[in-house]
Length: 137
Image (tube, rainbow, N blue to C red):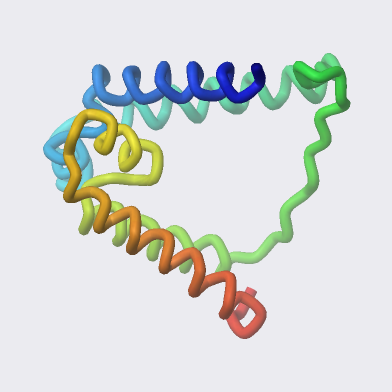
C-alpha cells in the first residue's frame, strides 16, 4: 500500500512538473540566460513553501505519517562544499537542460534520450561516492 501512495505522489509530481513547464529545456535555457522569471518563480515558490513547512514541523513537533518524530540533523558548515557542489550541479543542469526531478518526468512523457543523462548522473553519483573521502569538504 505504501508503494502505491509513493507511486501516486510521484505521478502527481511528474504531471505538475510537466504542466508547469519546469521540465522544459527551453524554460531552463531562458532561466540561465536571465530572459524569463518563470523558473525563478517556481524555484522561489518551492523554497518559500519548504521553509514554511520545515519551520512548522519544528515549531509544532509534527510527526511523520507513521507517527515517528521528524528529526533534522544540522549540516556541516563549509563554504567550498556548497560552492563547488552548486557550481558542478548548475553546470550540469545548464548543459543538460534538466535537473533530477524533471529528468524522470521527461522519461514519463516519452523523451527517451534523457536516459543517457540519467545514466551519466548515476555514474557521477557513483564516482562521488567512491571519491568523497578524498575530496575537500
